[in-house]
Length: 259
Length: 259
DNA sequence: AATCTTGTTACTATAATAGTAGTAACATTA
DNA sequence: TAATGTTACTACTATTATAGTAACAAGATT
Image (cartoon, rainbow over all chains, first blue to last red; front, top):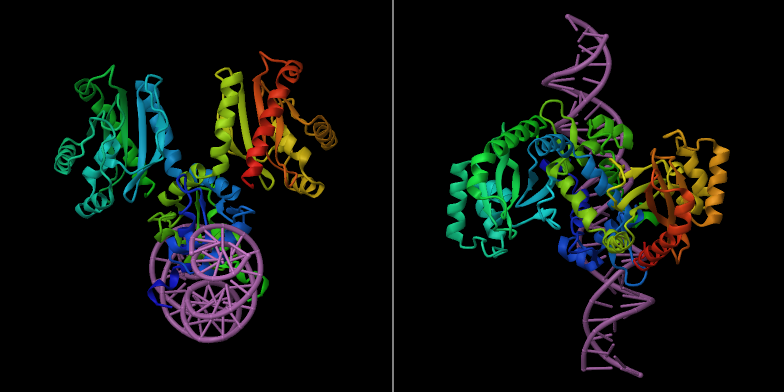
């Protein structure tokens, strides 16, 4: 064993890699599929998968042996969600601001090149049907833009290498030059603006959640408004202080939690 | 290596055991705590935990080295939740029944001796503040009673060995004899009744979700009503057909999915 | 100031895994 | 129908990852 990684379990990592192959887009996978995708040889894959099946994290259908998530995985999902202290810490802050100002608030956490939906409160005037839990389209959302604006240069180019830029509404900015300019402006401004670029009829402003010690973005918050009732100018005048205050408060909590 | 469990990874199991130590009640744990609780020696625990930390599933605070769930675990929680095909399969059925009859519906899955909340739709007349995701109090809920009624004898005694029976409302049945009688009646009746035994002001009826091939309970559904507006008699007369129909439909789906 | 407890590292025997190879069952194709 | 390809699963052993003991420094507790 190499001396450096003596305190790192390769077997465990392989197991985790297998688990991350299962999600909404891929609820079912075959053994060979798993083996190929993870690069683990078939025997080891079989051993690992078998372990998951025996412990209820995966289950296999009797006929075609397809593998799917088991109840233990679902339970673990629950536990991870509610046992995540960052979530528990942010919730009351957002609830407070929501009740105080009666505005829709969304929050998300950076995980590599995507955002993970953290916690959301919505006003009834907002038609927000089925927002995703995991977002890749950082370029098209207020929460995403402000994260990109605070990415380091390598992080940013890393994102755009893997990103698939496409028009989600007629307002979506898809030209790379325009996107880069927008990101630069967001950085200078300190908060981001989304003018119906993600969902028709919704305009938003977003601010970064920072680790104040490491000076790095760890997430973002946004305030969302129906475009029919609000203008961007009005929002900027009346809500940016609330937004930045909220983002600052969350940043402090999150920093103290050592994210 | 023992020949029988050649295709089972002990290392992976240990890793999973570590992960399940983190939940809402225990968002933070120390290394030695993990080592003691799992029975894994300190060095191995260190190796496993280190792997989780390096991959972002756990994070450790700079000062006291306490371990907490990381963003990767939160993301995985999301994925497990939404990638669980049973959840996706049940959702539209419950939604349909909800919209058709305008009644509050709850569903849960058996995981050992507890129930995992699966999917819920609520009418505005129901004050259901903060129901738990994981339920141990099977004896006090409609969803729980009907599961107990379909447990095998060893499963049932297994539950009561670990269960802590306590009064949650003034109606909660806490006497063991009465509980056993109630379970027997539930079995004969085919559905369970909860008369404000879990939450004051809420009465429910519950039916089992069965694996029709294996003839075993895998979960349950309940219809919940405000006690102020409904009587148990009225519910039994008007809603048991809907309840049993719904449970049957879900059972079929779930069986076909091979839970 | 002394003791206990914490996380972390070094070392090596032992036990677990990787990888090759091969089987039977089933699917797909000719 | 026969031939070929694919699937999950198993047997075997060389390799290597892990378990376990021991020891250490840094904090915490006494």
